[in-house]
Image (tube, one colour):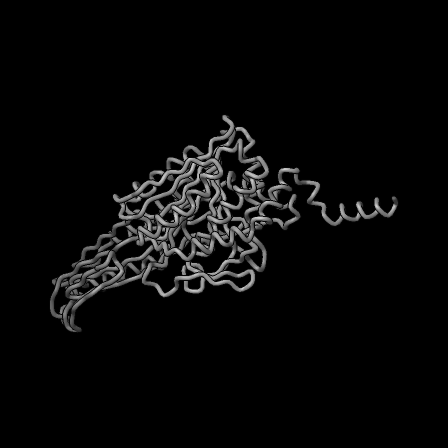
Length: 433
């Protein structure tokens, strides 16, 4: 009897987290583990179906794979085509639970950066590492969502949960106008009490990191003009500085006057001369000119990334002021395209990370420190960040996103699904805003 009590006591000391988890939460962990290989098989099926953003049929086929998995869990699923933005569409799934409790918005995407003509097309696996297009970004994130919801269903915590899922079909190359491309997502954000983004988990030095912010992505196009003439007349009152020197002045001023914390900016393409043209939506430029002709036209395109709407507006105003300081004999204009808005690091987001870290503590996992926002790119959660608190990076960990050889750590799918299932179950019992 004494030996038995000693064994029980030692077990309790060895697994302190077990006592912190409710029976339903223990059931969720067991369910994720039991379904792990089936979930990996489903991920393989999704990865082997090409869903490059411009492969509209392929994106829809992945949506058709996910749809019955959600319907089995009691979700009402809707596919909304978006021909007005020249993209495939979006999958939305709604689960109605107990009235008056929090509505959770889960965000992921169906498309990848790998179009059908890309050589990187198929799944492979070596132990707990899988390789394939979109295996982590973001088909791995969809797998985490499904595994978490299946665990909640098995444990009985999904029944009363209010959950809306938004799986966009064009996150990697969003359609335009953005107002139409993200109208559904923005509306869902206004209905939500918390938004959870299932893109890749960030890790630093082997430690899982918590993400409470994402920077914006804004694109700009700069054009300058000058007076054509013989190069011997450059900088005179009659001819002025020419288009390319004016372009250079502006870009140099950007470099020296714009820098501030949390801001990055880039020049991606320059074209200028006696004639110059930007083509293929700004991905290609052609120009003609001679060494002894003052150039009369020049272009540059680039981007800038910010951490808040206020910073976005401030940087735009600075850029416009620099452009307006024209050199003699030149004109300049800058225009900005619709981009991805930022997700600022708010106290509400920080409070959600604290809730996730409470789950970590109860599971016996290390705490997740805040990730530097400069280490994440823009994403769909930015479109709802003005309206709802959120967390980023609830998908699996891996490497090489957007590149041939993209990988995912298959074990991280289960770990992230357990975290998400427990966090969503706890949040779903709380009073709505």
